[in-house]
Length: 177
Image 1 (cartoon, rainbow, N blue to C red):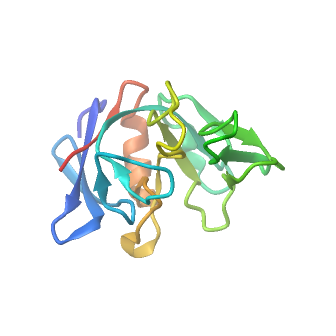
Image 2 (image 1 turned 45 degrees about the vertical axis):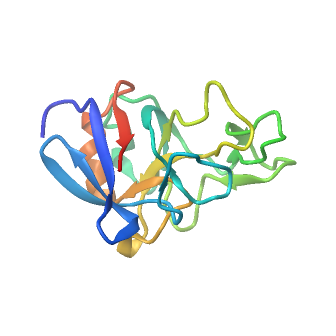
């Protein structure tokens, strides 16, 4: 693979819209997609992965679980027990990190299933934010068997460790059909 990656191309795996293929340079990796497949009209709660070109903004990692979280040119912050992500469209902090406990519904970033041991924030619905267009669209770690995400793109820990040193805030995750 090249020294730095500008584009990661993601497409659905033929015959399984909730699984995908991620192309990084000339190398292709399996990945998980949203349970709703790929959608051009993403909405909160639909489980779809947005059909879009999304820049990687920054990331989070658990140093106690994924020591390679700092081996990247991306701005990375450790995941503490009080980090959450707001998913309520009417809340002023919709689609933003929040400190938990938090009054509105939120996702806990320090997960027992370790999916967010490395979690990269994609610029879907960040600026500008549109109420109900989807929140917490991340590039993170996959479950065994690449079972569906809630709309994110997910790869194995081994693939993430291989990609992280090649990623920057100029890297775009381009989801295509």
